[in-house]
Each structure stands twice: as structure tokens, then as C-alpha cells.
Image (cartoon, rainbow, N blue to C red; front, side, top):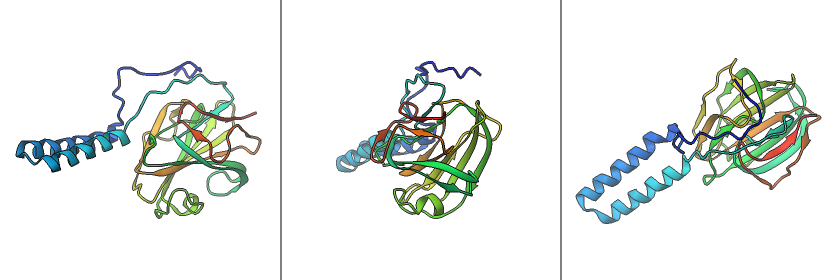
Length: 222
């Protein structure tokens, strides 16, 4: 598989996540029924719901050209924190954790931050605290992918469910290739993604910055 840093986009695919298709068709069907019955108010409400669901599940193509050492944002949203620390759940040692909060208005498709190989996938059930709270990283339902980069570094990307999010979707399995900027999953209805990086990671973003999955360079691995 060629994972060179060339702009990548597939014009042939529909710009909607397949996970959302059943929701979109259901809302559209209800809209059609109301229209046939002549219930205009309900029809307009159902139509608004259909467009809202369509907007939430949008999956736009992203153009990306990378420095091989650069790490890209795995999610759309706002950076909650970038701080060093110690993690024993996924990283087993000193690391830098970069957290991104996705609101209901953000694209919810997640993308790989680095090139490499997925060594492990760890799913942990949990609660549904508000995703912008610190407690969410420890107690919420989450799914972690432990990636070994092509340079032998360890990077962990963790999908964390939120207050409304009740469904974490991951399309990759252990042993699969991680291609920087490519889709690997999504979280439905508001959530966060945490990145655990080596302690010498050089961050290019800070708290409050807005990032785009697959496009924004958040830092680099020396």
C-alpha cells in the first residue's frame, strides 16, 4: 500500500458516512409520508430533521500533503488540552496527551494521525460524561488503537464517547495498516478523541485551536 504524502481524495465516493445512511433514509421516508398525507407542518419538520441528519453524517474529502514526521489531527473540533503526563492504560509511561472535542456541528469521521501498523485495539465500556470534561478520558466508553509508526514510535488514538454519543465505530482491526489522513472510524453524536504521543512530541497547536481531521498538522515526532 502506497502511503506517500500525496494529496488524496476519492471523487467517486459519496460525501456521507455509510453509518448514517439508514438514519438519512428513515428521516427522508417519514418526510415523504407526511408530504403524501398533506401534513405540511410535520413535513417541514421532518424535512429539517432529514437535512440535520445528513449534515451530521457528512464525510467530506480532505486534501493532505504531509511532512513524513508530522502528526495530523484525527478529528475535527477544538483542542481541549495538550499536556505531558503518565499513562498506564494505553501508553505505559510518560507521554503527551492531545485532546480534541467534537461538537454536534463537527464532522465526526475520524482519521489516522500517522502512518504505521495497528498493533492492538482495546475497547473499554464506561459511562457517558460530557466529552469536554477531563473525567471523560478516564471513565467514558472508549476504543483505543495502538499504532506503531513506520519509524518504530508508539502513538495511541482513543475514540471517547460523550454525553450524547452512544456508538463508537471503528473499521480497522489489529494488524491493519494505518495510512495518515485515511478514515478509520467515527463516533455518533458529540464526543472527543485523545492522542497519546511520545514525550518528545513537538506540538504545533494549543488549547482553543480549531483543527480539521486529516488536514491540520498538530505537531511532529522528532
